[in-house]
Length: 344
Image (cartoon, rainbow, N blue to C red; front, side):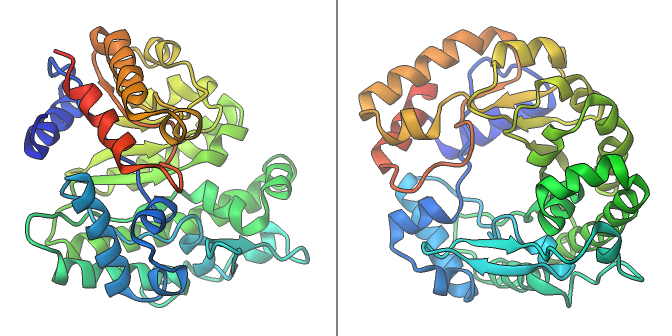
């Protein structure tokens, strides 16, 4: 199997230049898988930077990769900085409980929130400082996976009510998104400082934008992408949106997104057509019906099939359509990686 360095080089060439000749793979991993592999409890993971760092490092070592380590607070950090109440389910996974008595206009602060002192965004920075100082030899540390401003605002308000507000209260929606954007840029600037003055990529998660029309996306979301990504010209522009977002593909392409992690239900071939080969696409394998339940040899075969299907399209990266699920066997993940490596 190719080395981690070789795969990283293939990944970077795929994102920045186009087809590298062989298909790289990428793993999208967060707390559920890490907990199932290491047994770490949410009461430790989300509250102790040492516990999060060690659990992530153990997971990546077992997968034979170099990380990257990164603060992992799910979907809640950005909304919590704007007053969202964080609750934990029975598995200990955090979410935001919207306040039904507050409307979008009520959520707009007098000034943008300071990420260094507010909610779990402050904890993100604290954990990143720890990871940067205690990164195990041979591993890397990356900036946080940020919930994009529209998704953070919808999480804070409540998704259904927020979608109504996009139509009925567009000025309040735009003002709240602007505030969150300023806070996220400030957070990323602080992260860049912690990481030594440069970031390899900025990763925004923006599933909720899938609920918008193409026109709404162009008016509300694309200018925000320009502001955030544009503030960090040295960083690759990565987007996670595994919603039903095919109608947004031309706009995502025009926004200069370089890597798009798409959903398991998306037609990859259609997306290659809609993005005109300008965006590296990943997200072929279903993390539940395939990676979680198939035998390793079956996963490897499926991986090989997907690589052969899209290898000639150019910017194709093998991955799962969504983050890897709790309980997925290490052997199944390794089989996916081997499937990509075995096709020349």
